[in-house]
Length: 468
Image 1 (cartoon, rainbow, N blue to C red):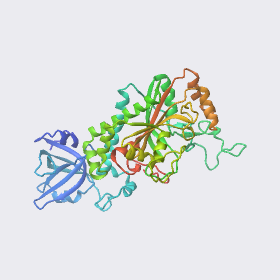
Image 2: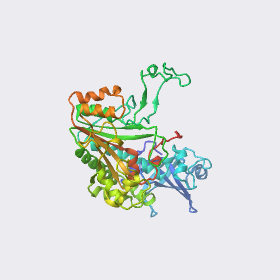
Image 3: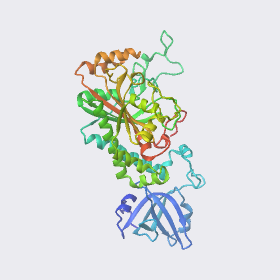
Image 4: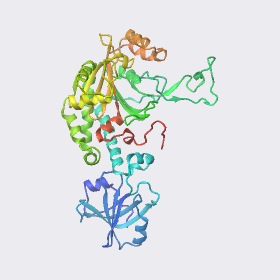
């Protein structure tokens, strides 16, 4: 048997089957079934496609009994045979095996992905293996398509992909929930006269942290390159064990010079609709699986978002709608509160039955860099809310007036010393500019209908847990 046969991958063989040709496949056994007719049926998957390719193994092969004893769910195999129309009704083609080799054995007694019913919580203990299941391999392919869709959207619109630093001395959100980065001996750290740790003796000569956002750096490049976007990991040391929070997650953050809040909202709507259209077009099998197994209404939901214009209203108008609704919320609604997911979902699912763009939030619940409105009480902020999730995008028009920004920092008790470079952007050729941030995992959660954000990232990082 030739060892130089083409290895086109199962995706290619199923989408463009070269019927009658001899081919070679390599992958992992998903199911194994032996019949009394002297045949074994192996479902093989190589990760390239949602569907498996069935290999029919005749008992006439040399050492058939030994071979079948060694092949179990999870075993990696290499199979050579002829691709023919299938005799069964579950697949269009199948591989008539002429040669089967075991590449890597898999002990069925020890393999944790056996026949027992596996919950998502159970599989979080085996993140290194869970991509071998239908659910998690489908999520991985959807993540890939969405990631490429992000780049496609921005690259075709003249944006520059900017690689912002992961290690930073800035706190873009001003919340202080950051992971410290240090080379100091934590058992005997150097201390100053005040008894506090002296980070001047640290690697960077000052305190350093893992970034919570690449926005501030993106603003610097937007003020020279016009249109930029970041797409990378961000970190928040928020001790939150909810289905919507991770300690490490990926963020997409476009920043555009000469844009105002209205243009920012239009960009966010176009961006989100592009991504939904892309995944519906390129992942039909995966999306049908999510409809069948995860969330029955997911396709109707996504198509509804695509077809409907996003509703626009101010935070103040939203609070008024919520207070007049007669609905009993877990968290009472008053002007000045940070709206909760229940409020956001009520607006999108009950009131408007469409995505909602809320604007002009109270300044006291928003970050220092957001542009102040003339009323002195609200800022030019926006949140994009979607059914089923709530907030999926948050953004704003940035404060481009130097004196107003300095006053805002002072009013929030923030020291401007480490942000002199940021203030320089307002000193030297300042321009109106705006941007937003999209939490990538929340997007994947929205698209797939998965209930827990820990299940839409390959290796989740949450409080108390840092598995592989």
